[in-house]
Length: 222
Ligand SMILES: *Cc1c(COP(=O)(O)O)cnc(C)c1O
Image (cartoon, rainbow, N blue to C red; front, side):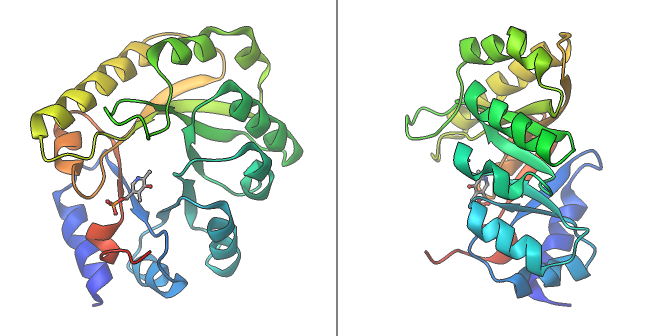
């Protein structure tokens, strides 16, 4: 068995069955993805549109591709026909474009709204007010080719576990809040939080989708 599939297997054994593991393959070659795929893994995450479309074209068609990075509106058209889930939706304008391209592709595209939970202001995301503006706005009701299925967030990159836990806790509260509310084109069941360095904390705080790169594929060289 390869190193990648070993690490994947070990990791999966520690996860609750309700948790989806997205193997973040950005910067890694297709051969690394095939190793994981051959061991039965289907969910992969990429953060660049060009890399994502290229890999999707070359690799097996039953792979479920997650777009986890910041997505520019003018690039939505390249992934609309096949993307499984878009994690980084952080504006109404972007959501509208996804809806438009979803319509063209004749499909409903699942999206997560990305929340700003970290202390750093470099990380993208909505605040609470913006979230409810989108969910309660009239425009979402007209968007028949997107479906909001949950929230995504990235915690502060720090060794302070209490800080990270607090951020995940807040996101979980917000998640519960909107899960119990009723909005058109919204069907909440996914909370995407946790990466290689903080997924254990994220799981303890109620994550059901983690995005793991380096702990599976090894460190990235940029
Ligand atoms: C790169 C990336 C990850 C994975 O990071 P690791 O630390 O390698 O697990 C998760 N989420 C997002 C949004 C990323 O860009």
